[in-house]
Image 1 (tube, helix red, strand yellow):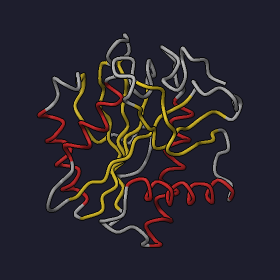
Image 2 (cartoon, helix red, strand yellow; image 1 turned 30 degrees about the horizontal axis):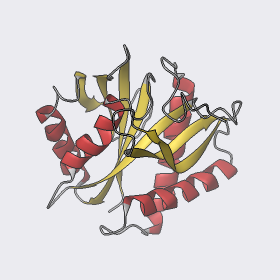
Image 3 (tube, one colour; image 1 turned 180 degrees about the vertical axis):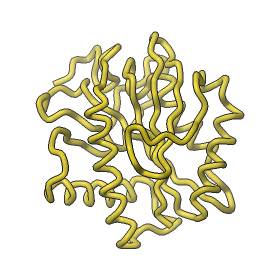
Length: 217
């Protein structure tokens, strides 16, 4: 069990191998592929409900032979914020390594936010309530990787991606951006995979955020 001093925030300067990042991204994409085909997601469905559906499809994909080097939990509460003891975070998907089943500090966090290609974009929340949770080290303290998932519930997908890019450009000082959001398939062949890099508060770590924009419309 995690100690009171470390808890669910993460081991400082914990280097996450690209092998695990690739495995997590692959199983996310596999789950999304089948979930999209079932057409269970509507624009009004809550983010946590979408994540629960996605997790079930991910489990089915893993049972069918996808990588078993990682496990995950969904909607995992973090410790209270050191600056505000009443502020509790919740990691949407917390990937853990199979060889460390009881080590809750070794993890890769994935945060999900709904997005729209038309109407209210929700891109501001994606940055303020998603990206910033990594930048402020609420999630993945000292970790070199984190994952953002954009659940696009209203098309078009490309427009939703562009809206996030605009929202991030407006906040690049606040997000301590080291490199801007750009398409990058080096860790995942998904066509709407992007990377951005940010200096994380309270650490000397520059974190790479992998953004997966998932069409669920």
